[in-house]
Image (tube, rainbow, N blue to C red; front, side, top):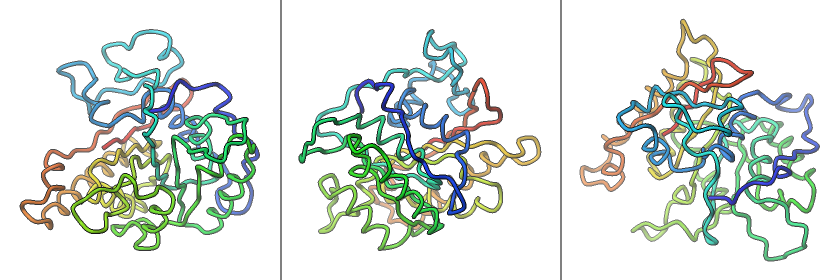
Length: 303
């Protein structure tokens, strides 16, 4: 995990917003960035849920993102046990895929926060975190690439972030996207018994903010999340979204149920002695309320 963050790590400049692709930054993006890099959100999902008060139900406790969360011990009803990020081993790398990258705010923010600033010109610079920002709209991807290249050179964001097209579904973009994952993240961590390891084994995190809009995204989004988990059970998925119609249409809860169903179906199609099947036999999706000073009806989905 990354070292303690400097405030300037959050500086985001020249994020172009206009008629090409995404035209705004949703509130959930800023909240998710804070959760991931300041509130321990990049820790393993199992570790985060295990740290909640003993005997409590992790799926219902809220995530406290109010301004007081970092200044006092968590209350019994809070699941924020990690305020300061732990230290990162020298050879550890976070390989993050963002779903629905929009204008690139989250990807650029993660790169700046997790890799820090590098004022010296070091040809051997290797980022602690590498990010692939994705979107299905080609104009949006082009806009994200523009924003990545506009960041200060000393931050080396262009060395850590790339933007790619990705249509959601159970094939995770097919061979083309798999090749891009391998290009970005390298093959050093991909280890399986096969002659050629699946590059999805390189991915450590899948993240996304405000990417679910009810029935229109339920099937494709649940499909791509389930596919990531089936190809690599170690991937930590963290999605933060606003509940659009919480009383009559619990969008995020429906999404969690659909992900669980598709993972279960995928495991049924595996061999009985599948290693992945053994790792995923207790798979479940956690959905929790997010407490925030300014924004309401926000939900955190983790698996």
